[in-house]
Image (cartoon, one colour):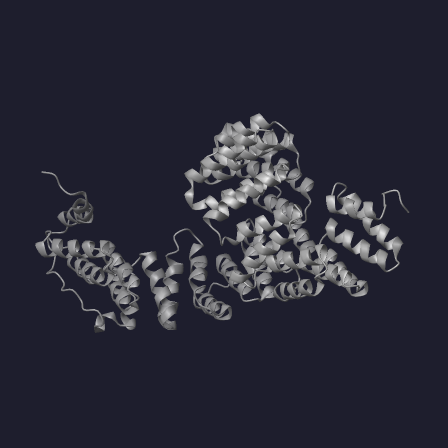
Length: 594
């Protein structure tokens, strides 16, 4: 006889129950009747089962009764249908009939899905009776008690969580994570301090470390440092509190102190790889790539087959364009058979940067998983760069066919690729085609507008950007781009200033918008006001176009030497910047000018 697979899936838990009950003790007492939600048995005061011992003398029934089979089956059907209230009622009844903790757990979880904490508490009573040492039961008990504001039950449950922590020391951290449910960090810390006092754990390193994490979250940095230091002293070979202390100092914006503390710890434990990895991380944070790579190499000399170190070193080497080193790390990972898709993707980047286009395309084509699309886009760009634009465009069409939900993104990427190859008219055709399908897509409209202004089509730019602003009047990039273009390419300075002022209100520290404001003020004949905005923009990070603008403003103010110094620095930083070179040509300035 053919049995429906859905019915088989419902019977699976019952088969396990048959095996459980068939081995039951022959002297089982009469079965319990299902409890009713909301009864006295479900009160908060009886939430926790006994801390130790058997479950009130209850044992499994002698045989699998028809009532039990029916009740468990109805519970499973209800669960599959999403009727969590009915699932709770029947799982609870089945758990009482079978005296089986796993069914009580299912009753708890069903009740939680109904947002009925009192029902969950009732099922938890039974679960802890049947399995007093179940860590998950006491964790859920603590969660529910905290949400209900029942401090006494929460504290008792958290104590059991700590006692049943499993891996030594994990109980305190589990308790700290549960306390993280409280909205006020100070409350979390206060409760954990009560727990530590109640358990007389002032000399327990795990307790001190858990307290340190909560103190840091509460903004008590000094207390967190003292607690972490104490944990480290109480267990000298423990790395976690040391790493915590270093991260805490970094978060407090004390990088020198963090570095000094880390060096002290490394002297104490020179073979500790985790401390060395933290040292590499600090170097990377400080943009000291060479030093970070040296630390990775030191680690690999001792343990050459560490995949995590090899991968981090490869990424860093690629970032600083040390292609030989990156290739070596990745080939080592490849020999280990680790992270094959990441290895192929990064090796593709290595070969691409080395100018080995064919090898790069082959590697990218091996990539599967989350980087698959990115790899295919890179293949298309490489074909275009090598002159086979038609093949590149075919690949983008294939991607649109394979991933219809990302069609607009592929049109954007194809247009960008064509623009980069100097094929502006073809790029415009791509955007026109895409906008024919999605006429109100803001990203496509913005991309076409930026292309249009480069082609001298200011009216087209304005039409597309105003269409964006009709749908979204606060689209900051559209406001800024339209304002800047009107200031730069037309004499509609008042309209330009109005747009840029609105953009600046929405994003007051954006260097591009500050540059636009400086530029429109200059074009309005106010170079003195313009200088402040341009300097503020340039202070946030070097940009050749902003530097070109500032130099032009300084020149207008009669401060030619300052203008030359700004331009000279800009040429050093970006010798091929097209806009900068146009400005310098207009002023007949060269790098050798004094």
